[in-house]
Image (cartoon, rainbow, N blue to C red):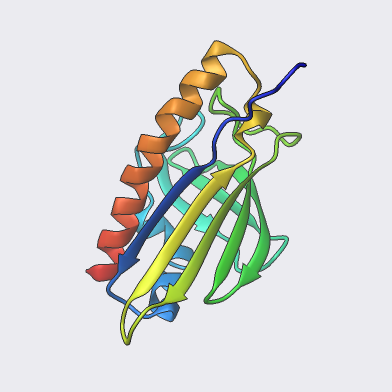
Length: 157
């Protein structure tokens, strides 16, 4: 029997002290304010980042050299409950139009003024089974943790 083991999805769940509408607004419209400028693709440093507010929209980085570099597409736009993004960045940190992994964020009200955030980045087997791909996947769990800490701090500021 030949079994294939798929890489685990990256999952993060936490609460923020804000209603879902505010958490959604900070995550989407405020994306460029909290996304770390240290996390980008290409040679030019990141100056801003954006998510276009609709299914079929883009999410991308805007760089100091004026170039917009795509990260993927918005697959599902359901404010203030669910955002599904098509992550098209390879394990070598470059955009690939033929690569598709999913980044899903769920915003669920808990109590009067708190929101549970459920984050999942799945489909990471699309990176391939090379040692370099495995190393990238291993580092992404920590990377997403740091990125989402920045989001939480922005929501609660």
